Amino acid sequence: MSVPVLELDEVGKSYGNVHALRGVSLRVRQGEVTCVLGDNGAGKSTLIKIIAGLHDYTDGAMRLDGADCRFGSPRAAQSSGIATVYQDLALAPLMSVWRNFFLANELRKGPLRMLDIARMKRICHEELAKMGVVIPDLDRPVGSLSGGQRQCIAIARAIYFGARVIILDEPTAALGVKQSGVVLKYVVKARDAGLGVIFITHNPHHAYLVGNHFVILKLGRVVLDANRAELTLDRLTAEMAGGQELAELSHELRGTGPGNQEVPTS
Amino acid sequence: MTAAATEPGRTEAARDDRVARRSLAARLLSRPEVGSLVGAVVIFLLFMAVAVPFRNVANVGTILYGASAIGIMAVPVALLMIGGEFDLSAGVAVTTSGLAASLIAWNFGLNVWVGVALALVLSLAIGAFNGWLLLRTGLPSFLVTLGTFFVLQGINLGVTRLLTGNVATADISDMDGFAAAQRIFGSEVVLGPVTLKVTVLYWVVLTALAAHVLLRTRTGNWIFAVGGDAAAARAVGVPVRGTKIGLFMAVGFCCWLSGMHLLFQFNTVQSGEGIGKEFIFIIAAVIGGCLLTGGYGSVVGASVGALIFGMTQLGINYAGWNPDWFKTFLGVMLLLATLVNVYVKRKADLR
Figure 1 (cartoon, rainbow over the protein chains, first blue to last red):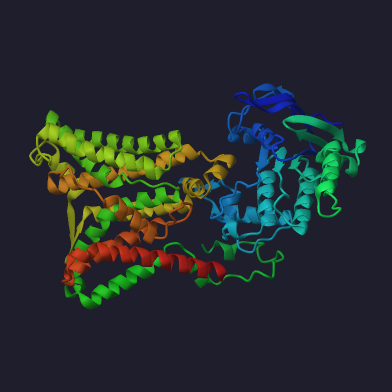
Figure 2: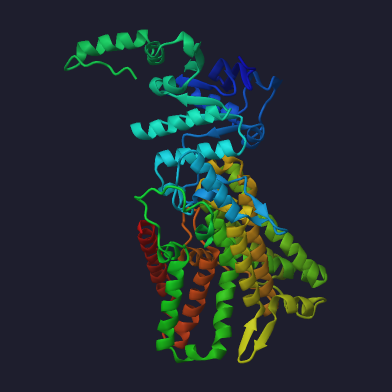
């Protein structure tokens, strides 16, 4: 097994007396998908924000290529090769596709440092085509595209700008079944391109389709840390849903509900 | 925006056949400044029809002068609005700048240019302060600059009265450096029958420069991004604070330019002037297609908005209408322009 690119060792984050994250360890290797699962409020967002450089951590250590690191800003994390595709995608909805693609990494030419618009449009088109997305008019505002297309722009952008580790924050949460499938294909493409992928989700089915390694967070702590070989989808789903708690809830509801409804497992 | 047609490889790739190629007309119509251009043509034709002096070529200079006085400020205000912020202090800050230059030079008996330079520093500082306070407190810019608006209004009156015992500054036309400064800020050029004020030149240059910056440089990209979605911009690494403070300082710079023109045009500055102007700058920007919510707009549009103002202001006079109705006319125009913008944008987006 290769050496991890990014390693979190007992990382914690406290806001005053609130401990949002406690003793979280995580290893991200290149060419692997590491899935982080957890329900709302489990600490997934805090974890991402620490890795992405939006927040600092208060305990433990984060190591990039074996060296301790702290990111002071999202820009610092990016220049270290860590790209984040946020749930809200970090795309400005009224800006055109190509302007969004190159935002903060604009190509410029000539002594006046003007934007090299033709080249940016060409590269944007090529990079999107590589991922199998064709957007007929790159001057269209991003806001007018579908959720899946926007997700792809954000992922293609991260890959193009030399990310070694890409964090995908619930990329399938707001999408339909078909669009989710499309996005999962890109997750695999990103992995095959040699990136270390951190896939944040609360959907164990999606995670199990693409993941190599699984970490489940609950109330800011790691409750499961396992390789794919050690797990089945059922086990993952049960762990994610809270196993015992779910069985109890199911029992309770059966007593009070109008019918004998099954509690959904995901 | 013809690059799309010339790009290699675009045509070969498979297209989504649900999306038809948009016609050139549709793409032109989706530009933010279209509404203002239509408005300008309508207003122009209206006054050509009803006001005889409007047809006189010699009056072009007067109309453009009126437009330039608003345009010089509408351009940076439009940039700021695209960047997602307001500046309600822009009107009185112009007066502050003129007063500062005049009072500093006159009170200390200095060369006029020293006053001019210190006024520039002050104007940039006011802009930077607005931006800093906004980012520091996280309050909406509407509130922060409303505060600055009242503070400056009071300072303008108070300091002028304190130093001169009057509501206006003393005439500085006999002081050192006045003649040279007047050539820069208040001169005029005669072109055949048309007399053009130097502010018209500044207005055109500012518009061209700002349009270039907005559409062809990295800074412009950042301005759209911080206005469209500041959190997204920050997440990808755009320096949001720097961009916003820079925009407020650009407004400060133009306040200085306008203030210097006021001073060297009339030799003295009235301390109560400038109140209410900030709305005119904002209206010009909105007519020009800037969204109140930021992230969208055009400086060329804002300049056309200023031109509409210039034409209306004088057109009403030339037509012999009662100028009392000017503001009503403005309000109606603002509503119409906004509706046209929304309508045109929706049509163009659907095509």
